Image (tube, rainbow, N blue to C red; front, side, top):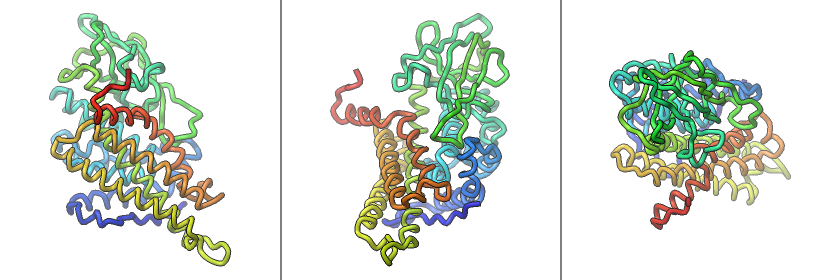
Length: 392
């Protein structure tokens, strides 16, 4: 089993800006990752298998719905605590963090924010405890960056709704107990529906052959005349803004998470540069290697400040969708570049499972396009600063 020697970079003493609770939450999550994720994650990535035994541990450390109020089973933490948890979990593996992001921001959040009290009490405690795992159904085979074009639909049959359609590239789909699914009614209005495993006509085939997020289970949600009880409609918000509000929360978590992957790659490269000797001295003593390391820590420090300020804004309810887009795009972009530079520093060893870098790099190739591609987030920022919509 691999030993986890990770030491978190903090070049600007950012820990001084965190509360005691933030540091306790982060350190508890870091300890759990070192004990339960790092020793086994390479094997699971090689096998392309999700380590289901981690679900209980994730629930125990409060990683499912950390900011959901305690009365519904959540930890009642603030948004910076949530971000720090996602940072540490993705430092372990992006796929494990994806499981948490989906559960927290894409399943528990819409039930909490858009659902009624009966739905909150029925589903949230079981999702928080890990008894239920959830999926989020928005992306379709023909509609990714344009979710408003979805064709999945439901019809009012009097005493129930009839749901038809399919969703693709869905994390947790193969083993989800519930799915929050977005579909159009007969007037073309988008609504959220809670679909439960076991409903006739609902299936979740797994997606195989992935080179990325190999330790995460991905699949489809397929609906063939699925009867949905009317009480499973989320009543408090409809329209495209409803699923996009969930994505804001998830993208916020991704911005922190990608930073964790970047930190892990940097820390690995830094340690290796001090140990690997070529031409009579450690490679960390060569100018080009120091250039790579200096650029890595600079980008990590900027990204740390970016998400910390975003977390402060989110705690006050002031973070905009465009600000979240900027952080998601920037932090995933710098993480990918850091992973690639770190891989070069390790030479051939960088592609082996003895080190985490190649796994992080492959995972980040998915993170850079899911929940809003790099280019789409650029256009969101462009529209925000110019006031001109370049999407159409």
